[in-house]
Image (tube, rainbow, N blue to C red; front, top):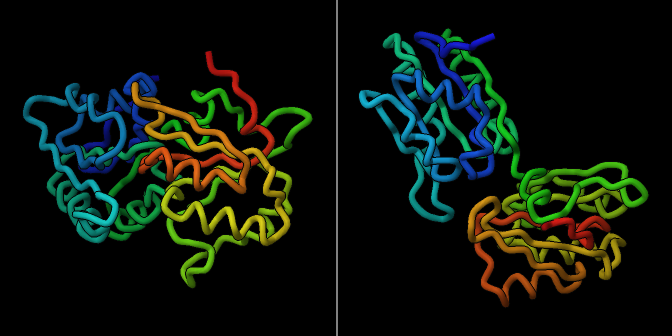
Length: 248
């Protein structure tokens, strides 16, 4: 059944990990019908070419340790345009509910009486490792995976991740936004009993023509990534599956 963008409402569209071919059909339809599109820096920006010529395009992207639009301002823009009776699309990279602050935007809209519809996106936490030939689960190696943010180091008071529990979990660890803090993360996991020989991988610029994958044991992965000049966006995979390579 065809879904329509809500008139005078907000549609949270997960745009996927960057390759426009991984945008969902529903997400692309929402972009084509929108009066306003509020988008981030990452994601399939090529899909904005599908927007109507008269659509308002608003860039609210955040540059790491650089220019950014405060989340409160983004919320205000969504509510303001929707209250004007406009069909608003909030386009995020990946999935809005995986470190995308989609929940905060839903709350702001609901508090203002604005209807919200969710169009999930393909999360980079699973898709980028897959494109690098790494399954996040594999029978005989691991029965699950955990996705965590590495935005702050384990020693930071703001960190809410139980790294000790993860070190003992025997699960694949997928770390998003963790390149800068990878030395501290690797050290913390080893300090809590995870072997330094555990396979690990860093995948940079996932789904793009520049995608590259580095593999090394946990005890060396941070140094290998630094020597190669890895910068965000990049994803870290830690666990036995990181040793697999099913990429063509």
